[in-house]
Length: 394
Picture 1 (tube, rainbow, N blue to C red):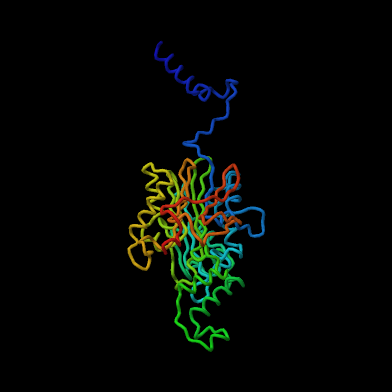
Picture 2 (cartoon, rainbow, N blue to C red; picture 1 turned 45 degrees about the horizontal axis):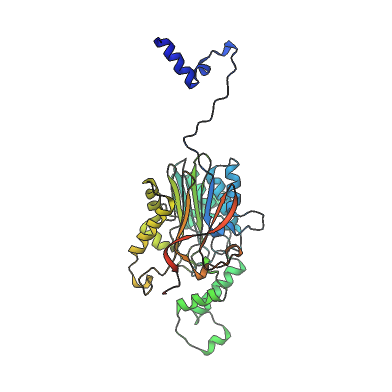
C-alpha cells in the first residue's frame, strides 16, 4: 500500500472523504453529526419545597425546571423559572414573597446563581422589595462585572432594570408570625391584654419551640431556603439558591445562600452543590466548594456531601451549638450533582421531628429532597451522617 492509498483509506475510515468532496461533484453530503464531549442523564435536584409548592399552577419547581431544561431552555434559566414558583408562592414562608421577616418585620432576601458553561455567577443579599431575588441575581451575572450586590445598591440595580419594587413583601401570614414572635420576645412593648398582669423572663428557645408547636412558624421554614441544581443531556450544569434567610434575623444579616462556595458552587466540568439549614456553619466551612472539589477527586456526590458534613461536625466546638453528647444541635442538608447526572442529598441528621409533612408525607421523621428525571418528579428521603434524629439527645 502506497502512502497515497494509506491516506485515502484513513480518510474513508473517518468519514473525511465525503467532507472533502467538491461541491460540484453531485455527491450528497450527510448532515454533520453532533459531537458531544459527554452525555448525561438529565436531572434536577432540589430541597423538598421544590416538589411541594405550585403557586396555584399545575407544576412544582423541579417539574417546571426539568420540562424547560429538556425542551432546550438555557440550563440556568430553566432552574430559575422553577424556583420562581416558590419565591412567588405566599404559602412558602422561607423565600421570596411572604418570607419570614427580620427582627424589625422587614423581609430581606438573598440569592445567587452559577452558570457552569459560561463560568459566571451573580448574587444579591439583603434585597428588599423584589419578590424574585433569583432573577435579580441572574441579572447581576448577565449585566455587570460583579458577583454580588447588597442592600439598597441591589434594590437600585433592580429598579433600574425595571423590576417592580414593593414597599412590603410581607403577607398576612408572615406578618402575623412576626407579631406573635415580637409579643413573646418583647412583651414590654408588644402586649396582649393578659400580658399587662405578668412579668416573666424571656426564654427565646422556648418561645421558638412553642411557635413551631402552635403552627405559627412552619418548622422547616425557620432556616428555610430553596436550592436547585440541574444537569442536562449535554452535561451542562447550573445551580441557584434563594431564601428569605433566618427568621427574625438581625437586620442586614446575610447567610450562606448568596455566597459562592457556601450556599452554592458550580464547576461546569465537575458538578454542583448547595445547601439548606444553618447558614453560619456552611459559611465557616465553605462546604459547597468543598463538595465540588471532592467530586473533582472522583468521589460520588453522596461521599462528597458526607465529607462536608464531617467537616462541619468537627468544627462545631461552641457549647451553645452542641447537644449534650457533643453533636451539632442544628441540621444542614446538602444537594449535589455531577456531570454524569449522579446525585445525592445528605443531611447531618436524616431524621427530624420538625420536618414532617412535606408533600403530605408523614413517614416517620425523614428529611426529604425533591428530584425530577424522565421518570417524573419525586420527593425522596435524604441520607444522614449522624444516626437518629436532630432532637435525639438534645
